[in-house]
Image (cartoon, rainbow, N blue to C red):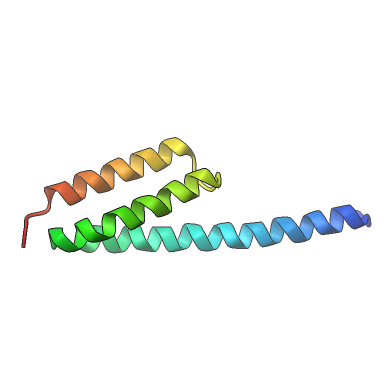
Length: 86
């Protein structure tokens, strides 16, 4: 690592961004996992918009690619629509 102030600052910033991105990514993955486990359609319908919003935010921040976000959203919507009303 170079001994320039700007380089040291850049390292600090990138480390901070990396931790933040990992947190958002992990939180979203957990939300997706929990949504997939649901068997009650009404509960899944309630949680789906929140999870889709989280996925959109990841794509907006370039944590995941926009096509991956679209694929995730499509698969989740399809899964929720196949659930039986309980």
